[in-house]
Length: 65
View 1 (cartoon, one colour):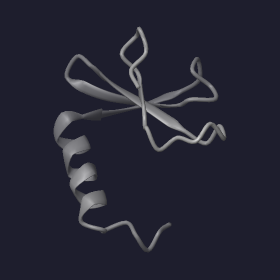
View 2 (view 1 turned 120 degrees about the horizontal axis):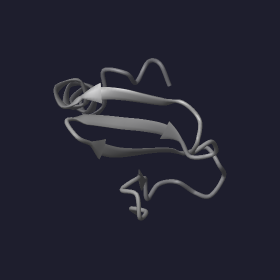
View 3 (view 1 turned 180 degrees about the horizontal axis):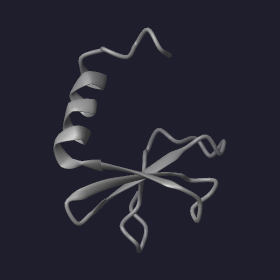
View 4 (view 1 turned 135 degrees about the vertical axis):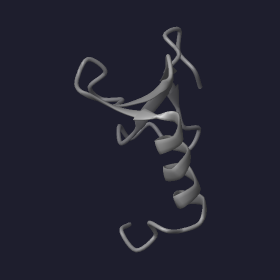
């Protein structure tokens, strides 16, 4: 679901408050904690985000969770 400022929350978010949101901001991907929308954000280049996304899809971080 995308809000009016372009932030996207995963459809897997179950309303328990443990969610992150992201949006494309210029040539960067911004990530924030949905419980603290005015708090700090992490910013990644598009190539950094794509590498992270591919790593998730490939199971590279499964041992962390």
